[in-house]
Image 1 (cartoon, rainbow, N blue to C red):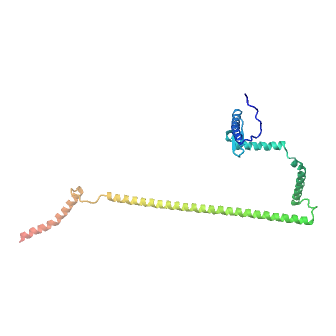
Image 2: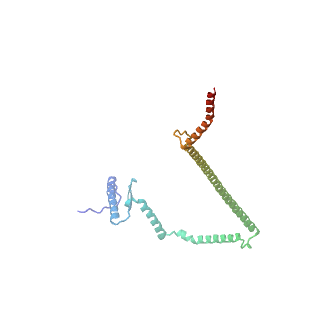
Image 3: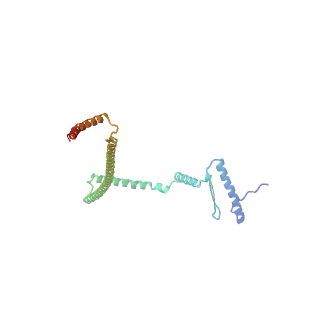
Length: 247
């Protein structure tokens, strides 16, 4: 036997109302999940209980994206379906006001360019002159400010370049000093090598020595010396022998 039609009205019994809410909430969330899976639809479900407790379901947990999309769609829909009749009624007045403002701006522009001045009174011309003077003062002030900023920037760059130049000059001097020291060391090493070479030559030269074995030249020298001695000794020998005989 089927169930009878449930009368759609507020359930007065608090317990029955809570039980019904819990059951139907579960079924609603299940149906939302099923339609999102079966139909590949983006679904966002928000439920607040009578106590203010929040229950929600969103496809792929992107509730913020779905709500943002809903806001854009609803705003565009309202603009197309429900136009603001009050603002539409004020368009004519707004158009007239903007038209007058544009004409006034165009006339002032012609006055600033020195055109269409015949319709101006002396006070209006003086006011226009004062405005132009104030504009020129502001323009000159801005120009001077830009020039000072440019000069300051150039001075800063000049100072930086000067510091860099001093740094490079210092590096060059240090390099030249290192090169000079290296050259001095090289010259000193060459002098030491030359001195050592000279000492080696002196050490290698043969020292004079007495040749005990004798050579042919030495033998000749000794023979000549012996002959000289013999010549000097012979007269004395002869005199010695004569003296002996005489006695």
